[in-house]
Length: 615
Image 1: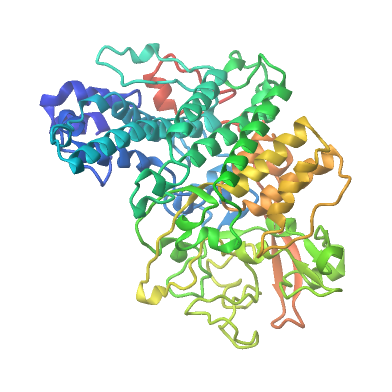
Image 2: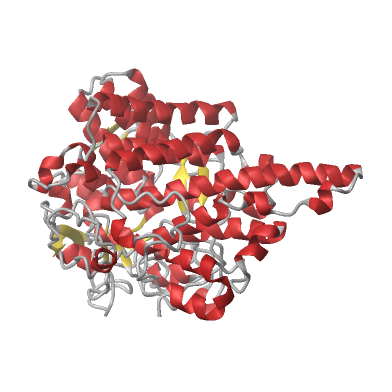
């Protein structure tokens, strides 16, 4: 039974309101509005009640993605890129990797989900004038009048929260499908779904940017300034989040994919998948300006990069100023059970980082101002001998970028897990992660890592899974580090050689727990572009950027590259031999897979919807 029919059976008397729930997504599954609001309430009871309206606005956030459990509750989008391989070969995420996905089989079926959220935003936006505030308005006491003023301000802010969220949901659609139908208000009973068509890509981009511009000045720079309660800090829309969304949207709009329609082989409606009308340099400039304005705004309020890279992604990360917006799940240990090494009690080791990603992390040679960085090279024996050297750098040592240690669990690494105590000597069995052949976490054990690595980013190592300990896991949607990278990328395209390009990359590289040498001076535009892209790859690893970055860059080679792991033989540091090998060959059809196919069920309902190229 689809969403509308189920709801109709519950509330026949509210048929006008209920039919609007169709929006245009007839195939949507049965879902509750949100756990925070009672779905048995009529539209009028929601609109008139201040507490119910508050819950409705909170419910709009329920559509924000949780990237840790994104696909079928156990796979990350990283496993559909050269960042990771999913251990279970028959998991639905593998459809991306073997090329079997299509308009009837999508591992990431978001069309109906995000249009549902857009419909909820539209419904919320048309009814703020119905909220009954007479209780505080008509009470002449000073406290009631103060409450009335505060409630009016909150109603105003709620409207801009809804507009920001609607813009966010639209961007999630646009980056997958190109131009989509822009539904800016709730649909009526008379709506002809066959007449609904996709808006142009330009119309969609312009709408999202305009909504960000409208919301940004009306939202607070930091949650406490908006009278959000403590539990909402970092989890409700702010000025920073609206500006960060604009920065990301404009970066995508300037990138290759939305400016190179020739990949679509003569698609009859290029305006649905590409932009025109102004020189591309203007788009890069707009992206650079948007990112720099956010950088300057955060600096005004004292927001800088957090000093500890690892802490950005683990418990209590909502309090890190660098993180602008996060999801808000309940306490759980699902991510740890999914991704801890298999020797840990109750763990499955599902998301296994690739050697491709590990190779992207540089070496640091030396210390202080004379230190230099160099790319990892399998043909350099010193590099292979120090492949997992995270020791304190010396004047003559080769040490890996510390972000590798924070993001990836490598052979021999110690963790602070109750099961794997930190600091025990490597030779002690079962005290360190063992991904070497014959080790407790390696082949040939069934379901052991296929790449020689396990996930570490986001893992809360203090959770004792044997006792079913849980923790809050907040997925970061926007953070300042990304904005620095957005700015550097856009500025390099419009003003190569500008000193600010390296300045903001080096701020990231010089984070207190990272301290990698600055980029070399004198890089030309192409060299700087390659450096920026690699910096995004390692800084933003497993944050659901790589899947989209490779598409917007139209990096076909990386999209269909062979996935590598490492075969580790020996049983001690002195005897380990590391040999890369191909884990999986990936499939990518550049004639169509830069964008998603629109689900066949939606095209079947909306006859005016044009399918994406070559699907």
